[in-house]
Length: 177
Ligand SMILES: [Zn+2]
Image 1 (cartoon, rainbow, N blue to C red):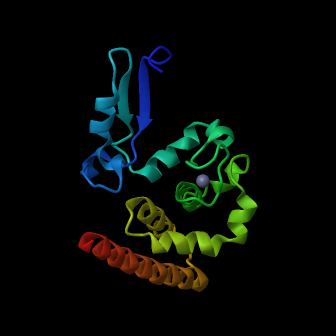
Image 2: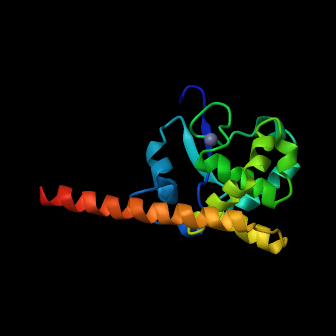
């Protein structure tokens, strides 16, 4: 890689003000990680940390090529439309009123057919700032959240609590052995 790139720009996962060391997600401390990955030939920068994720997505308005080439997915070459990164990007674009312009890179029909699931998932993950930003934008624009989306959020929340409880139980068993 160092023979190909002298500068590598990495879009920050979280605003710099959210910097912290947490085990679950190295995006919170990527400034340190990127610094450690540098070589004498390749310099790595984290960029966009002065903006919230939804502000960065909003700035795509100034780059029409994004409508043709935007890739949010971390699981496949084409956007899968269902992973966390795709969901929050699609919901952010929806909240910004821009989603319909992205039919070349996202399955817009699938989104609207399953909009309650997308919004329900977003509600269920509102502790995460990326999802919360989408909900705040929707609230700012007086966009309605259906009862079905709220119901789905409650189901997902209950399922997550069961998973967390089981995870804690398994961890406690592992510690004892
Ligand atoms: Zn995806």
